[in-house]
Length: 318
Image 1 (spheres, rainbow, N blue to C red):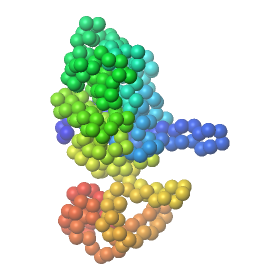
Image 2 (cartoon, rainbow, N blue to C red):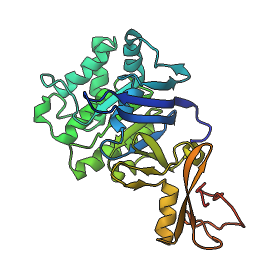
Image 3 (cartoon, rainbow, N blue to C red):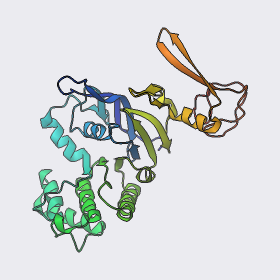
């Protein structure tokens, strides 16, 4: 993806929900940064409560962040009015939800046509576009059936057609395979992969499944409202500098950054941890209980001399 133009640049995103009376506020996103290039296929992986759906709604302009900036092609959308956001979403972003969100009284064909008509596409052109899309997704014989007569995989293909109807720059998919079985999951994800290969549309998928994430060119790991890891083509390890953190939860669980987890997996308990309190606050410092590392414990590449970071993968070694 090197050299490709930046489509999305979101910086410092916070989302804070007011807690119920007597309880503390809920922080869903904690200063999150994310960039997406034109035509890129990226997945975001995280468990329930990690902030995935909140992030998707904010990136899609469906919800305002508590703080932060979101730019599409350099244009800020956070301060847009709803009157301006509606045409922006219709022309630039396609949405695919876990539940499908199809209008139950309309056939799959008419659901796609209605999306196009909302975008002021003429009736004849809307019908032609809907027919072409649904046929290309293997629904030639089922497109005029009502949603309740379609299988889970067929419903998601209608949702994909609806999301692609206006040729968006970005398709956002929130757990798109959450309600379908394993076989249909692979079919739907292969459709995403093929569409990505054949078009300039960017895809951003949030999921709890590592299997689903593996279809993307790059995937990000989301935990407790922060991006804590990146994998795949175009990953930028240095962008994680501000979110590499050691977190102790209220019940005493210890969450470690991914490069430290890799090192611990290699050396087991042979690590020394100490606390350092300085002007910036306390830090937890960890290092192997050995004199010298010959290979990076994360990516296994050779290390040359005394170093604090692996030159190949960026893992912190000291």
